[in-house]
Image (tube, rainbow, N blue to C red):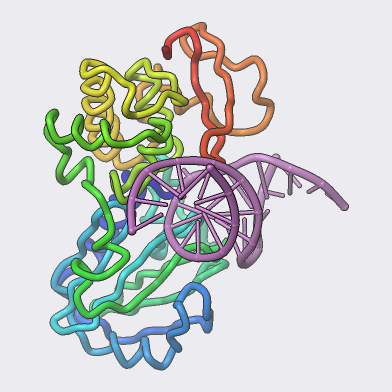
Length: 279
DNA sequence: CTCAGTGTTCAGTG
DNA sequence: TCACTGAACACTGA
């Protein structure tokens, strides 16, 4: 379930386990898709004995800075996640009491990293749309080099945001999802931002007024910041967010704040919006 | 059995 | 070449 806030939670979890520690052992599943052709042997060789200096994130990409290249880069896709034993990976409020029968390593584990101090970090990926890659200079190579601004680390200025939006004829919803424009936004964040900004998601980016664009920019910054502050724990998202009604089946008869929620396909993605509030 | 899905990429179109 | 669209990818869970 990874958009920027969930990925940032993953980054923090990984940092807590890995930062400053030496990688003692690596176990990789053979998966040509997720590892983009790299063999388990190559991964073992690249990581074992190295120390993790830092864990960084831009958009939905996470990478470890090791003491020497290549550096591992993780992308969760639609279903990926970091896990650590004992459900310590879940947000506090959502953490069930420890289950002694919990399967470990979890189903769909792709890589297990064992650190000094008996720490373990696992990445799972059920639907194999995630990627685990090695990069010599992660920041300056794809996929990271192709990313646009990260709304948490570097929200664009009003003028620059306006300038870039004014050259795009695509629907505002599609633009927000474009990782080369804005890194880390996914389907729920885009819908939430447009709902809070009061903008019809189908409207072309270049046709929003300056005042409307500024509302979008501000809500983008605010939604992401708040979601990260509560560690992507949805139960702590404000109760008036569209988020709480956008999921699941039975799309008819849903409301937020008494207003009807509609669903429409935009750029191939289901978009939830509220005609009464979004013009 | 069918279909949608918190993501990305790439071929095809104008 | 550019901007944009839609299908494909892979597989689970409803």
